[in-house]
Amino acid sequence: MSKTILVTGGSRGIGRATCLLAAQRGWSVGVNYLKDKAAAQSAVAEVERSGAKAVAVAGDVSSESDVIAMFEATTKALGALDGVVVNAGVAATSSRLVDMSVERMRKVFDVNVLGAYLVAREAARRMNKSRGGNGGSIVLISSVASRIGAPDTYVDYAGSKAAVDAMALGLSKELGREGVRVNAIRPGVIETEIHATYGEPERPYKIGASTPLGRPGTANEIAEAIVWLLSDASSYVTGAIIDVTGGR
Image 1 (cartoon, helix red, strand yellow):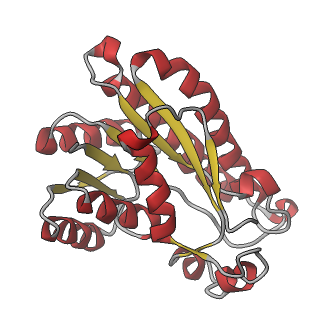
Image 2 (cartoon, helix red, strand yellow; image 1 turned 120 degrees about the vertical axis):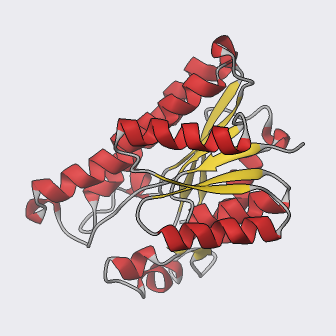
């Protein structure tokens, strides 16, 4: 069955991999981005080469007006949504809490917590059956950091993702009778450019080597789990928090 989805942070990494895998199923995709328009347009072009429809939609997830606008732009271009992937997020350089600035923490919480809640709220408003929606699936991207705490690295990021886990549990109970399923994926250390962005390009390989599977994961492996949760194959799964961590 063809679907229409919106992926926040869809221009690169896990978000981009999700857009491309969805396109292989023939799904229409809204590719949200913050600043890198070229990367988003590249993702759209690749989706279209698969024969699916796509649109690039700019927006800062921590801004309510931007979130509403990105949903409006996506539905105007592609139609009513069947799924939303709440993926956009930020981290920061490794640090102990004692050395973190309030500016750093505010940015992490504004994007990863407030932003996730704003996107999920707008998805619920549009997909809830009592509001005229057709139901659907919301997939929240958390992190294994929420479970292990990320000491000496980024306990602020870990805390922000713990809030995402809590939303998955609570919102799934709110929306179940509305025909909307809510689940979360907790990736482990994944090969994406985010590590280089924060000055640690070798981090996934160092940590990945210590996992039971002996390697970092790939964006495509996370995308497979996300697309499964968006699909009808997971129709009885809600309120789940799924670790995709290589056993970490």
